[in-house]
Image 1 (tube, rainbow, N blue to C red):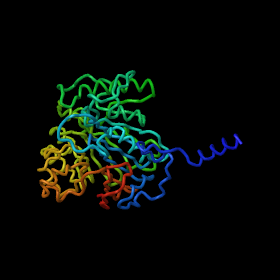
Image 2 (tube, helix red, strand yellow):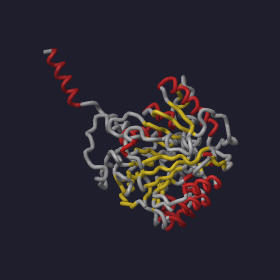
Image 3 (tube, rainbow, N blue to C red):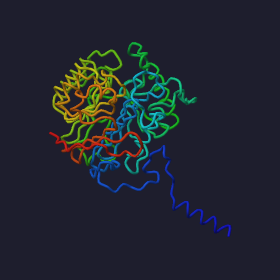
Image 4 (tube, rainbow, N blue to C red):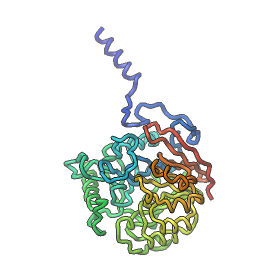
Length: 412
Protein backbone atom coordinates (compact mmCIF):
# COMPACT_ATOMS: atom_id res chain seq x y z
CA UNK A 1 0.00 0.00 0.00
CA UNK A 2 2.86 2.33 0.89
CA UNK A 3 4.48 1.86 -2.54
CA UNK A 4 1.15 2.34 -4.33
CA UNK A 5 0.73 5.73 -2.64
CA UNK A 6 4.24 6.77 -3.66
CA UNK A 7 3.59 5.82 -7.29
CA UNK A 8 0.27 7.68 -7.31
CA UNK A 9 1.94 10.77 -5.87
CA UNK A 10 4.62 10.68 -8.57
CA UNK A 11 2.04 10.30 -11.32
CA UNK A 12 0.05 13.26 -9.97
CA UNK A 13 3.22 15.39 -9.87
CA UNK A 14 4.04 14.55 -13.47
CA UNK A 15 0.48 15.25 -14.61
CA UNK A 16 0.40 18.62 -12.90
CA UNK A 17 3.76 19.68 -14.34
CA UNK A 18 6.01 22.36 -12.97
CA UNK A 19 4.13 25.22 -11.39
CA UNK A 20 4.59 28.76 -12.64
CA UNK A 21 5.79 31.37 -10.21
CA UNK A 22 3.30 34.26 -10.56
CA UNK A 23 6.19 36.70 -10.16
CA UNK A 24 8.10 34.95 -12.91
CA UNK A 25 5.74 35.35 -15.84
CA UNK A 26 7.66 32.61 -17.64
CA UNK A 27 5.49 31.24 -20.45
CA UNK A 28 7.89 28.36 -21.01
CA UNK A 29 7.77 27.21 -17.38
CA UNK A 30 4.73 24.94 -17.59
CA UNK A 31 2.34 27.09 -19.63
CA UNK A 32 0.51 25.88 -22.72
CA UNK A 33 2.28 26.71 -25.97
CA UNK A 34 0.80 29.58 -27.97
CA UNK A 35 -0.57 28.17 -31.24
CA UNK A 36 -1.76 31.49 -32.69
CA UNK A 37 -0.01 33.23 -35.56
CA UNK A 38 2.17 36.23 -34.68
CA UNK A 39 -0.38 38.59 -36.26
CA UNK A 40 -3.52 36.90 -34.89
CA UNK A 41 -3.84 39.82 -32.51
CA UNK A 42 -7.06 40.58 -30.65
CA UNK A 43 -7.96 43.43 -28.32
CA UNK A 44 -8.07 42.32 -24.71
CA UNK A 45 -6.09 39.13 -25.36
CA UNK A 46 -2.39 38.49 -24.66
CA UNK A 47 -0.10 39.38 -27.55
CA UNK A 48 0.75 36.24 -29.57
CA UNK A 49 4.30 35.00 -29.40
CA UNK A 50 7.02 35.91 -31.90
CA UNK A 51 7.45 33.50 -34.82
CA UNK A 52 10.37 32.72 -37.13
CA UNK A 53 10.80 35.40 -39.82
CA UNK A 54 9.15 38.16 -37.75
CA UNK A 55 11.02 41.11 -36.20
CA UNK A 56 9.86 42.24 -32.75
CA UNK A 57 10.82 45.47 -30.93
CA UNK A 58 9.40 45.74 -27.38
CA UNK A 59 9.65 48.96 -25.35
CA UNK A 60 9.10 47.54 -21.86
CA UNK A 61 7.47 49.92 -19.41
CA UNK A 62 8.18 49.95 -15.68
CA UNK A 63 7.82 53.70 -15.14
CA UNK A 64 11.43 53.51 -13.96
CA UNK A 65 13.76 53.67 -16.94
CA UNK A 66 14.38 52.68 -20.54
CA UNK A 67 14.52 49.09 -21.75
CA UNK A 68 13.96 47.72 -25.27
CA UNK A 69 13.88 44.02 -26.14
CA UNK A 70 14.48 42.85 -29.72
CA UNK A 71 13.82 39.48 -31.33
CA UNK A 72 15.45 39.32 -34.76
CA UNK A 73 13.93 37.19 -37.54
CA UNK A 74 16.03 34.09 -36.77
CA UNK A 75 15.40 34.24 -33.01
CA UNK A 76 18.54 36.14 -32.02
CA UNK A 77 17.70 38.35 -29.02
CA UNK A 78 19.06 41.71 -27.99
CA UNK A 79 18.31 43.96 -25.03
CA UNK A 80 19.17 47.66 -25.10
CA UNK A 81 19.43 49.28 -21.66
CA UNK A 82 17.70 48.17 -18.46
CA UNK A 83 17.06 51.39 -16.57
CA UNK A 84 16.14 50.87 -12.94
CA UNK A 85 15.24 53.81 -10.69
CA UNK A 86 14.01 51.62 -7.81
CA UNK A 87 13.93 53.63 -4.54
CA UNK A 88 15.14 56.78 -6.30
CA UNK A 89 13.47 59.64 -4.47
CA UNK A 90 13.50 62.12 -7.34
CA UNK A 91 10.16 63.95 -7.48
CA UNK A 92 7.51 63.87 -10.20
CA UNK A 93 7.84 60.23 -11.16
CA UNK A 94 4.94 58.47 -12.85
CA UNK A 95 3.48 55.41 -11.04
CA UNK A 96 5.75 52.37 -11.04
CA UNK A 97 4.48 49.44 -13.13
CA UNK A 98 2.92 46.96 -12.67
CA UNK A 99 2.61 47.80 -8.94
CA UNK A 100 4.10 50.39 -6.62
CA UNK A 101 6.35 47.70 -5.08
CA UNK A 102 7.69 46.32 -8.35
CA UNK A 103 11.45 46.10 -8.80
CA UNK A 104 12.21 47.16 -12.38
CA UNK A 105 14.84 44.57 -13.24
CA UNK A 106 12.50 41.78 -12.08
CA UNK A 107 9.73 43.18 -14.28
CA UNK A 108 12.09 43.18 -17.25
CA UNK A 109 13.01 39.58 -16.48
CA UNK A 110 9.40 38.44 -16.33
CA UNK A 111 8.55 40.21 -19.58
CA UNK A 112 11.56 38.89 -21.47
CA UNK A 113 11.07 35.30 -20.31
CA UNK A 114 7.44 35.46 -21.37
CA UNK A 115 8.28 36.54 -24.93
CA UNK A 116 11.63 34.77 -25.31
CA UNK A 117 11.57 32.46 -28.37
CA UNK A 118 10.71 28.87 -27.53
CA UNK A 119 13.82 26.84 -26.76
CA UNK A 120 15.93 29.88 -25.80
CA UNK A 121 17.04 30.39 -22.21
CA UNK A 122 19.17 33.54 -22.37
CA UNK A 123 19.59 36.91 -24.10
CA UNK A 124 22.21 36.91 -26.85
CA UNK A 125 23.30 40.55 -26.62
CA UNK A 126 22.92 43.22 -23.96
CA UNK A 127 23.79 46.74 -25.15
CA UNK A 128 24.20 49.55 -22.61
CA UNK A 129 23.95 52.86 -24.48
CA UNK A 130 25.49 54.95 -21.68
CA UNK A 131 26.09 55.12 -17.94
CA UNK A 132 23.04 56.91 -16.57
CA UNK A 133 20.74 55.51 -13.92
CA UNK A 134 17.58 55.62 -16.05
CA UNK A 135 19.34 53.41 -18.62
CA UNK A 136 21.32 51.35 -16.14
CA UNK A 137 20.60 51.54 -12.41
CA UNK A 138 20.17 53.72 -9.32
CA UNK A 139 22.29 52.14 -6.60
CA UNK A 140 21.26 54.00 -3.46
CA UNK A 141 19.47 52.64 -0.42
CA UNK A 142 17.23 49.60 -0.72
CA UNK A 143 19.45 47.49 -2.94
CA UNK A 144 20.78 44.01 -2.29
CA UNK A 145 24.48 43.63 -2.97
CA UNK A 146 26.54 40.85 -4.46
CA UNK A 147 29.31 40.92 -1.89
CA UNK A 148 31.65 38.67 -3.85
CA UNK A 149 31.20 40.65 -7.06
CA UNK A 150 31.21 44.12 -5.55
CA UNK A 151 28.03 45.38 -7.24
CA UNK A 152 24.33 45.83 -6.49
CA UNK A 153 21.54 43.71 -7.91
CA UNK A 154 20.07 46.53 -9.99
CA UNK A 155 19.29 47.17 -13.65
CA UNK A 156 21.25 44.84 -15.97
CA UNK A 157 23.28 43.56 -13.02
CA UNK A 158 20.14 42.38 -11.27
CA UNK A 159 18.57 41.15 -14.49
CA UNK A 160 21.58 38.91 -15.11
CA UNK A 161 20.77 37.04 -11.88
CA UNK A 162 17.32 36.30 -13.34
CA UNK A 163 18.13 35.67 -17.00
CA UNK A 164 21.68 35.50 -18.32
CA UNK A 165 22.98 37.25 -21.42
CA UNK A 166 25.77 35.82 -23.50
CA UNK A 167 27.55 39.08 -24.30
CA UNK A 168 27.51 42.60 -22.83
CA UNK A 169 28.42 45.57 -25.01
CA UNK A 170 28.93 49.15 -23.84
CA UNK A 171 30.73 52.30 -24.86
CA UNK A 172 33.78 51.96 -22.55
CA UNK A 173 34.88 48.33 -22.16
CA UNK A 174 37.50 47.50 -20.93
CA UNK A 175 38.59 50.94 -19.65
CA UNK A 176 36.04 52.46 -17.25
CA UNK A 177 38.04 55.47 -16.15
CA UNK A 178 36.14 58.74 -16.38
CA UNK A 179 35.98 60.42 -19.79
CA UNK A 180 33.43 63.10 -18.86
CA UNK A 181 32.99 65.65 -16.13
CA UNK A 182 31.45 64.24 -12.95
CA UNK A 183 27.74 63.71 -13.59
CA UNK A 184 26.57 63.29 -10.00
CA UNK A 185 22.88 63.88 -10.81
CA UNK A 186 22.70 60.61 -12.70
CA UNK A 187 25.56 58.90 -10.85
CA UNK A 188 27.39 57.89 -14.01
CA UNK A 189 30.77 57.44 -12.24
CA UNK A 190 29.17 54.93 -9.83
CA UNK A 191 27.48 53.23 -12.77
CA UNK A 192 30.77 52.75 -14.59
CA UNK A 193 32.51 51.32 -11.53
CA UNK A 194 29.65 48.96 -10.73
CA UNK A 195 29.32 47.75 -14.31
CA UNK A 196 33.05 47.06 -14.51
CA UNK A 197 32.89 44.98 -11.31
CA UNK A 198 29.83 43.16 -12.61
CA UNK A 199 31.53 42.22 -15.88
CA UNK A 200 34.75 41.10 -14.19
CA UNK A 201 32.99 38.90 -11.66
CA UNK A 202 30.57 37.25 -14.08
CA UNK A 203 33.26 36.66 -16.69
CA UNK A 204 35.01 34.52 -14.07
CA UNK A 205 31.88 32.95 -12.60
CA UNK A 206 29.72 32.35 -15.68
CA UNK A 207 31.80 33.10 -18.76
CA UNK A 208 30.03 36.39 -19.56
CA UNK A 209 31.67 37.98 -22.60
CA UNK A 210 32.11 41.74 -23.03
CA UNK A 211 33.05 44.12 -25.84
CA UNK A 212 33.18 47.81 -26.64
CA UNK A 213 30.46 48.98 -29.04
CA UNK A 214 31.74 49.15 -32.61
CA UNK A 215 30.74 51.49 -35.44
CA UNK A 216 31.03 51.10 -39.19
CA UNK A 217 30.06 47.42 -39.03
CA UNK A 218 27.07 45.08 -38.91
CA UNK A 219 29.15 42.14 -37.64
CA UNK A 220 29.10 42.86 -33.90
CA UNK A 221 25.33 42.46 -33.43
CA UNK A 222 24.91 39.79 -36.09
CA UNK A 223 22.20 37.12 -36.12
CA UNK A 224 23.40 33.86 -34.57
CA UNK A 225 20.98 31.10 -35.55
CA UNK A 226 19.94 31.33 -39.19
CA UNK A 227 21.42 34.51 -40.67
CA UNK A 228 21.60 33.23 -44.24
CA UNK A 229 17.82 32.89 -44.30
CA UNK A 230 17.34 36.63 -43.60
CA UNK A 231 20.17 38.47 -45.40
CA UNK A 232 18.27 41.79 -45.41
CA UNK A 233 18.31 42.01 -41.60
CA UNK A 234 21.29 43.75 -40.06
CA UNK A 235 22.21 45.96 -37.10
CA UNK A 236 24.72 48.64 -38.11
CA UNK A 237 26.62 50.71 -35.55
CA UNK A 238 26.72 54.46 -36.31
CA UNK A 239 27.99 56.25 -33.22
CA UNK A 240 29.81 55.77 -29.92
CA UNK A 241 31.83 58.08 -27.68
CA UNK A 242 31.13 61.02 -29.98
CA UNK A 243 32.62 59.25 -33.00
CA UNK A 244 30.37 58.70 -36.03
CA UNK A 245 30.68 56.48 -39.09
CA UNK A 246 30.34 58.77 -42.13
CA UNK A 247 30.12 55.96 -44.69
CA UNK A 248 33.84 55.38 -45.12
CA UNK A 249 35.58 56.35 -41.87
CA UNK A 250 35.10 57.49 -38.28
CA UNK A 251 34.73 61.21 -37.60
CA UNK A 252 35.08 62.89 -34.21
CA UNK A 253 32.16 65.17 -33.29
CA UNK A 254 33.86 66.26 -30.03
CA UNK A 255 31.05 65.21 -27.70
CA UNK A 256 32.17 65.60 -24.09
CA UNK A 257 29.25 64.67 -21.85
CA UNK A 258 27.57 61.35 -21.09
CA UNK A 259 24.46 61.73 -23.24
CA UNK A 260 26.51 62.87 -26.20
CA UNK A 261 28.65 59.73 -26.02
CA UNK A 262 25.79 57.22 -26.41
CA UNK A 263 25.84 54.17 -28.67
CA UNK A 264 23.59 54.49 -31.74
CA UNK A 265 22.58 51.95 -34.37
CA UNK A 266 20.21 51.40 -37.29
CA UNK A 267 18.31 48.10 -37.47
CA UNK A 268 17.15 47.22 -40.99
CA UNK A 269 14.97 44.37 -42.25
CA UNK A 270 13.98 44.53 -45.90
CA UNK A 271 12.40 47.95 -46.37
CA UNK A 272 11.94 48.47 -42.63
CA UNK A 273 14.42 50.65 -40.68
CA UNK A 274 14.50 51.45 -36.97
CA UNK A 275 16.94 53.90 -35.36
CA UNK A 276 17.87 54.11 -31.68
CA UNK A 277 20.49 56.19 -29.88
CA UNK A 278 19.86 56.20 -26.14
CA UNK A 279 19.95 59.85 -24.99
CA UNK A 280 22.18 61.09 -27.81
CA UNK A 281 21.28 64.78 -27.88
CA UNK A 282 24.58 66.37 -28.99
CA UNK A 283 23.83 68.54 -32.02
CA UNK A 284 27.13 67.93 -33.82
CA UNK A 285 26.79 64.16 -33.38
CA UNK A 286 23.15 64.08 -34.50
CA UNK A 287 24.03 66.12 -37.58
CA UNK A 288 26.82 63.72 -38.48
CA UNK A 289 24.63 60.63 -38.05
CA UNK A 290 21.70 62.02 -40.04
CA UNK A 291 24.12 63.04 -42.79
CA UNK A 292 25.53 59.52 -42.88
CA UNK A 293 22.16 57.71 -42.87
CA UNK A 294 20.70 60.40 -45.10
CA UNK A 295 17.22 58.97 -45.80
CA UNK A 296 13.77 58.35 -44.42
CA UNK A 297 13.16 55.46 -42.06
CA UNK A 298 10.04 53.75 -40.74
CA UNK A 299 10.47 54.07 -36.97
CA UNK A 300 12.75 55.35 -34.24
CA UNK A 301 13.08 55.47 -30.49
CA UNK A 302 13.10 59.11 -29.49
CA UNK A 303 16.40 60.15 -27.93
CA UNK A 304 16.47 61.60 -24.41
CA UNK A 305 12.76 61.04 -23.74
CA UNK A 306 11.72 63.66 -26.33
CA UNK A 307 13.17 66.62 -24.44
CA UNK A 308 15.55 68.30 -26.92
CA UNK A 309 13.87 70.40 -29.62
CA UNK A 310 16.85 71.18 -31.85
CA UNK A 311 18.14 67.64 -32.19
CA UNK A 312 14.62 66.22 -32.50
CA UNK A 313 14.01 68.55 -35.45
CA UNK A 314 17.31 67.48 -37.05
CA UNK A 315 16.36 63.80 -36.88
CA UNK A 316 12.72 64.22 -37.88
CA UNK A 317 13.49 66.33 -40.94
CA UNK A 318 15.87 63.68 -42.32
CA UNK A 319 14.35 60.42 -41.08
CA UNK A 320 10.68 61.38 -41.53
CA UNK A 321 9.65 58.45 -39.32
CA UNK A 322 6.16 57.04 -39.55
CA UNK A 323 6.37 55.89 -35.91
CA UNK A 324 8.22 57.32 -32.90
CA UNK A 325 8.37 55.49 -29.56
CA UNK A 326 9.25 57.52 -26.47
CA UNK A 327 10.14 55.96 -23.14
CA UNK A 328 9.39 58.54 -20.47
CA UNK A 329 8.79 58.29 -16.72
CA UNK A 330 8.46 61.78 -15.20
CA UNK A 331 5.25 63.72 -14.72
CA UNK A 332 6.60 66.92 -16.27
CA UNK A 333 5.85 68.92 -19.40
CA UNK A 334 9.49 69.01 -20.54
CA UNK A 335 10.16 65.25 -20.82
CA UNK A 336 8.49 64.65 -23.21
CA UNK A 337 8.59 68.27 -24.33
CA UNK A 338 5.09 69.53 -25.17
CA UNK A 339 6.35 71.88 -27.88
CA UNK A 340 7.83 68.90 -29.77
CA UNK A 341 4.56 66.99 -29.51
CA UNK A 342 2.56 69.95 -30.82
CA UNK A 343 4.93 70.48 -33.74
CA UNK A 344 5.37 66.87 -34.89
CA UNK A 345 2.47 64.71 -33.68
CA UNK A 346 0.41 65.46 -36.81
CA UNK A 347 3.30 64.35 -39.05
CA UNK A 348 4.40 61.16 -37.27
CA UNK A 349 2.59 58.61 -35.11
CA UNK A 350 3.75 59.07 -31.52
CA UNK A 351 3.59 56.35 -28.86
CA UNK A 352 4.56 56.98 -25.23
CA UNK A 353 5.17 54.42 -22.50
CA UNK A 354 4.03 57.07 -20.00
CA UNK A 355 2.15 60.35 -20.08
CA UNK A 356 0.92 61.12 -16.58
CA UNK A 357 -2.86 61.62 -16.38
CA UNK A 358 -2.42 64.97 -14.62
CA UNK A 359 -0.31 66.26 -17.53
CA UNK A 360 -2.62 64.98 -20.24
CA UNK A 361 -5.82 66.21 -18.61
CA UNK A 362 -4.33 69.69 -18.10
CA UNK A 363 -3.50 70.07 -21.83
CA UNK A 364 -5.65 67.68 -23.88
CA UNK A 365 -5.04 69.66 -27.07
CA UNK A 366 -1.32 68.84 -26.93
CA UNK A 367 -1.95 65.08 -26.99
CA UNK A 368 -5.00 64.87 -29.27
CA UNK A 369 -2.99 63.59 -32.27
CA UNK A 370 -0.86 61.13 -30.30
CA UNK A 371 -1.53 57.50 -31.18
CA UNK A 372 -0.87 55.69 -27.92
CA UNK A 373 -0.01 56.30 -24.27
CA UNK A 374 0.74 54.35 -21.12
CA UNK A 375 1.84 50.77 -21.65
CA UNK A 376 4.40 48.53 -23.26
CA UNK A 377 4.88 49.46 -26.93
CA UNK A 378 5.55 46.69 -29.45
CA UNK A 379 6.57 47.12 -33.09
CA UNK A 380 6.07 43.86 -35.00
CA UNK A 381 7.41 43.60 -38.56
CA UNK A 382 6.13 40.93 -40.94
CA UNK A 383 8.46 38.45 -42.62
CA UNK A 384 10.49 40.23 -45.32
CA UNK A 385 10.02 43.71 -43.82
CA UNK A 386 7.31 45.13 -46.09
CA UNK A 387 4.74 45.95 -43.38
CA UNK A 388 4.59 46.44 -39.64
CA UNK A 389 2.08 46.99 -36.83
CA UNK A 390 2.27 48.78 -33.49
CA UNK A 391 0.60 47.31 -30.41
CA UNK A 392 0.28 48.68 -26.89
CA UNK A 393 0.06 46.20 -24.05
CA UNK A 394 -1.44 46.60 -20.60
CA UNK A 395 1.39 47.23 -18.12
CA UNK A 396 -0.64 46.82 -14.91
CA UNK A 397 -0.14 43.03 -14.71
CA UNK A 398 1.89 40.26 -16.34
CA UNK A 399 -0.69 39.02 -18.83
CA UNK A 400 0.43 41.41 -21.60
CA UNK A 401 -3.04 41.93 -23.01
CA UNK A 402 -3.41 44.10 -26.10
CA UNK A 403 -4.99 47.51 -25.50
CA UNK A 404 -4.26 49.14 -28.87
CA UNK A 405 -3.69 47.92 -32.44
CA UNK A 406 -2.45 50.25 -35.20
CA UNK A 407 -1.44 49.20 -38.69
CA UNK A 408 -0.48 47.95 -41.06
CA UNK A 409 2.15 50.54 -41.84
CA UNK A 410 3.71 50.11 -45.29
CA UNK A 411 7.50 50.24 -45.47
CA UNK A 412 9.10 52.24 -48.26
